[in-house]
Length: 89
Image (tube, rainbow, N blue to C red):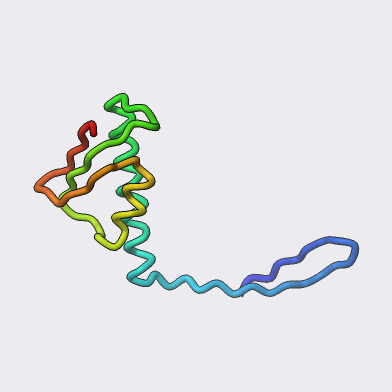
């Protein structure tokens, strides 16, 4: 447990407790963030504009996050494939 002291007009002591367990959901969310970062880096290497839509082919991705991935990376379509591939839409 970590003690935090806030200084305001009065001194207030607040105790915080952190749950540091990594659940399977948190691990999947981390993998999705890593995948989005990888896609964005590849978009940059390809010289794509921020508002330019793409098509994605991914060997593996959490299907339940498909809408989030598509929205974050401007993908009109995502399909499962043998390799990581980005193409213009």
